[in-house]
Length: 566
Image (cartoon, rainbow, N blue to C red; front, side):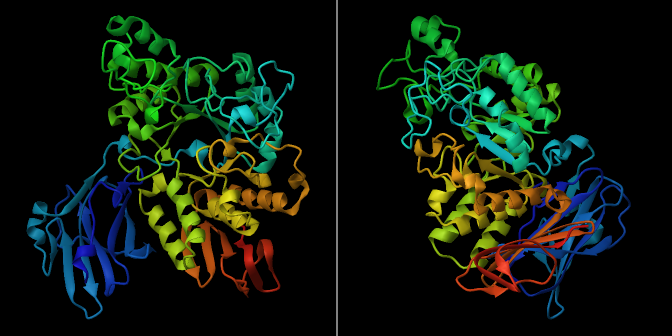
């Protein structure tokens, strides 16, 4: 037994409430350690202790290339459990694992000294998946470049079809353009739109907010946005707005008041200013986002700022009935602020969703602050697999490990993306390899979480690093009538299956094939993608979708979806 690999903590990603009186217990061990049996011995925390309690065998639920994870759900009608683990190796030798570590014996008569214990009598201690977003496919829209309703706008100074976009030039996308494409989005299988910022700003990207309560006049009026939300909701499409609280524009009246009045301004303490007044050119005497002069950083620890930004969150929920927020650079903002903000918003709309922008591990933020994060590590695993030419088993291990990074309800709410406004488009990173591009999106649709399509990915739009990943949507593209687009739509359509919305999840490598199985009730659907250079045998089962697959084979670059639908 590799004792150093053993890990368990109560009230953590290895022990959490599933709602009611049910708890999920997970034990991490070394991968392929010599266990014949792994058991949890548990009892009601406040019941009279019966020596030995209930012994329940744990099953291996996942492995990540380094560790195995054993899991079990326990429920005895009381939301408080004490427990220890009993480990039996293949020679029959027994050990116990408790808060004190590993020992050959365990004193159950004095278990209160070092048992594991988990108590969760309050419903607020459980953080289930947001039911309003279960199974939805997100679609990210950069509003300035998605759809144009009027090409004769006087401010337009950049051609819609330019391949060299500029963040300081405008092509004219607007809300009415989005409204005209809602039926298209619904036909694509979209269930939620994530908008980049819609507030007044001087740039095309919109992350220099000049008025948190305002709407960028380039996009339309408040009436236009009301219409967009209402018509999206009528099509069962949720609306998620990008909120930028880490920094504002230097042209925001709040900051400008501090420029003019210095310390006398009521807003001087709303920013991080070292001196009487903010400087208007470099070197800066105030904190800003990435050192950019035009984006001064906001002091979200200031109670007045917290109240102001709380009112911003309430406003868009109450006045426009939006469904949640993507939170820009949210990892640079305090835990206390996000708890305050979440409480304020949930009081207005209990189903409101909070998606943080954090490119790395977000465990400390999830639950009390955010529901989800933009899952860049998911994208990175698929990218490194291709670029570094790993074995398929490496990718399976990496994706399994990412799923075990958080409590399962949070892993089922990760925003799984491949492209965005901050990274090169996926087809560019795939170097034009459409097979791997479609395989990647198929994996995103089958992997637990909320898959996100960046506008234009469905027609293989090219685009490198910012600003070239922000070109205008190519509505006249011939790709809409080609096989690739139809395959993309077919793959996305599986996300509406109950098995993919709610089902159990198993992922494994079988030679050059990555297999993802989802099961719910009598429905069982499996995705198989051939990531190797040779044709392989097609798994048995009713084929529901095939691309470069058939007659018992999956060709290199091929996709097969098969199984039992009812």
